[in-house]
Image (cartoon, rainbow over all chains, first blue to last red; front, top):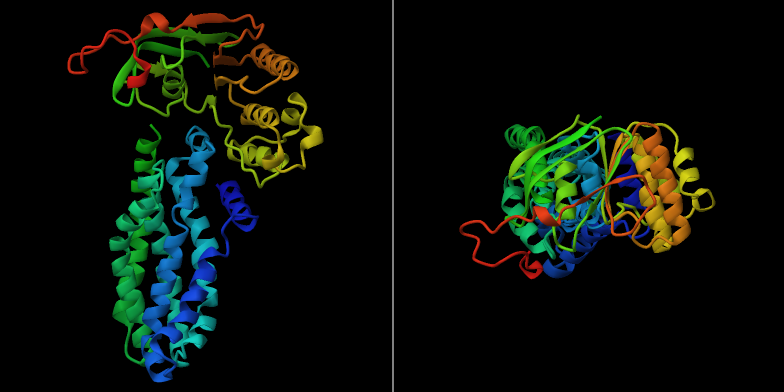
Length: 218
Length: 208
């Protein structure tokens, strides 16, 4: 399974792997928002947590259809299905590789992007904490969506429509953690909800993803 | 190690294509499947490999004994030949790719990205993957597509070595590999149209 993780990371880093795609999209969103809503820092500071969370979520969405589509096209998915790896393991590793190449860079870069939106200094730690807790759920749910739509030509639209409603709880609680942290309010409850959603998706969804993938390969 | 297929009926896209298939593949033997395009050879191989469920009947063989090679080779263009083989060796838990590189004469290409190979070289790399799986039963779907005469001979040598070491192989192919193999023509096993599937006679490949 480690071999699969290493291969997916290598593929993401090499030419055409799309490693920087999510990150540059995130950067574009945060740079363009002040142009759109005006340079007033009080207003920007108020909307910063929401905008950053929204940017992270959409950046994540951008690379979802690559999770299985490339392996499907070149036939490696069939070969992986006949390999000793359990399908549940394959989808878990795929989700992990997606998070490491998309979610993790977003978490690490988010303080810098917070600066561009004049996020108040109290907000940085909570922004990073909420993204670290929330983005794994985005990758796991996204892997489920990618497994559902694998093999469809131009499945990206359907994938977005399927996955976006499932992203809403994570977005609500993630942005709430960041906003409350920002304003110095107690945010334990949304933090626990966010962590609970992530833990639940990681525990349950790989089984669903493996099942739909097996059905889709038939 | 023995692969047994009993009363197998398989379908593609919900329509039965082959029915009543029975055969046994003993260790050290090769079985060549023949039949016209669209008759269901690939579907049969996918079913035997466990990628698809049969409608009726069963495939009896130990788990984790089958190595499957499809039309597409499952190669990553940005990884080198050696990296591609190392990846599959790690996945199947075997050590060393030297054997596979030698078997398909890929040593000179080991450091080249797979995307820069010709179609025949890619095919050789895809077939070399079989050697790193370490599995006894090879299921091969048109393995000689885009191979030249010398490479076909090289492939046949590898199959013979595999059979000599107690492995077995099930091949769908249209050319003569010069193997001492049993031949199964799947044509006579075409599924009869069932009630509810419409009243066409025989196989119409445009419907499948």
